[in-house]
Length: 70
Image 1: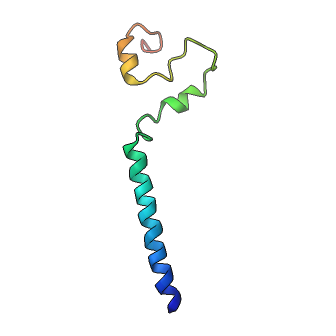
Image 2: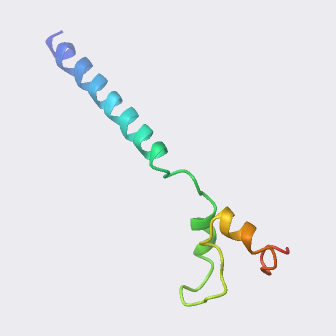
């Protein structure tokens, strides 16, 4: 029974810490762009023509880009 007095507060502290880290990640933009990192692995780092690293604002400014034309 004595172990419950230690384990329950410890579990609550761990849950609170996990929630705090999750909200920090959301607020700092960790989940903003989930597609570009997955697509950027398909391109060479030295290729100046790939635009997978561009955000949506950049691609909207370049409508003549061949990747945007489909």
